[in-house]
Length: 447
Image (cartoon, rainbow, N blue to C red; front, side):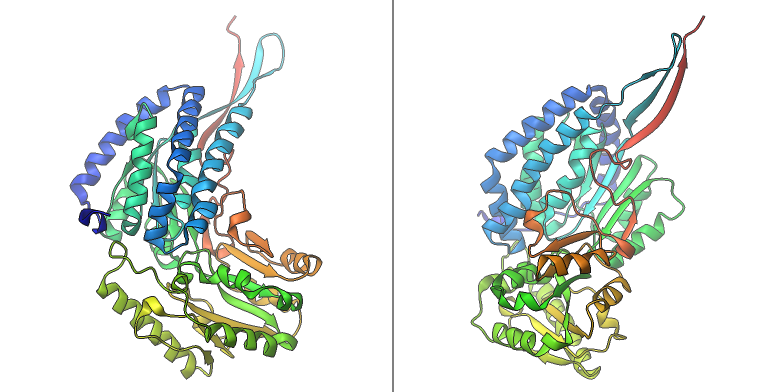
């Protein structure tokens, strides 16, 4: 890694924002002028180049996020490759066909691009959360102005470079590293932007959505960090490392990690013992925060450590008990598990960018749904236990994405939030109305 590669990219301001919007208007006309087949060929060419550089992409994302290389490949880079191919295949297969009503009258559904998409993504599975949205937007004829996390600039920049090598319209995707929420709001509110996609924290999601409340733009906001997991009795026989990965990867800060854990009252002492053994086990580097000069600063470390210690202190003040202890170095911090925390505590509904896990117990199985559904449900719920019992629990939940005895690596569809954690359109499938401007035409032959 060169010294320059370890630095965060420069922050862009309003001048660069205006220039990017101007380029996007030109790119939109050129990209939309291509036929759907030409756009498909471009995306497939890009998918091939992406696959050729999969190890480079995964290595960069691994360094930036703290994932293992295997996790980055499985859950992000290789997933994107399959998604690109699926988007092309489904959009080409679902081309609307005209209906002939009689010899002179026909009806048809017409699909066209909406224009410029602003896509704002945060930390975590950055490549995946970007290309979940880029691929169908591009295939529908739209262009993208992306605001990636500055902490993922190397992997994002490589992906952009691969796109520029593959596409006849290089500016169909552009990056802006805006330095403040106010500048992101300017981008999203601009008349040139037809649609806004957001992936990140609940607080920023709500603030940005509020600024767009009177807009007619298409919106798709997905806020994670309030995910849950259910541990049924049968899961006590499972190798706990499989379960721990779901809330451990990247120190619980991906937006996909469950942080609220529920078990039955009759199993609580057993699970408590499991967590006690786990929290006292030798430290593994993947358990803490990534320590890399390109992704962290001492100021950020101190801020996170202060917030972390504040929340542990708050849990104790509210009557909760704690398994584990704070480390002087946040990068060597094993997760801290809080239990016996009152359900009325605000900590039950907050999201944390550090490994603080809340373990709750309920008396009856139907109460899992009661407590998970009562608050924002984030992006996913993981359920561990016998499949039949797990399915009964899943059927009662409002969470959009359910994983039974597995985590996100086995999911083939894009994931967005559900319930109160989603704003606007949560369907990211290639046929979603998010990507398309649709009209119904009725055409009579001129006599």
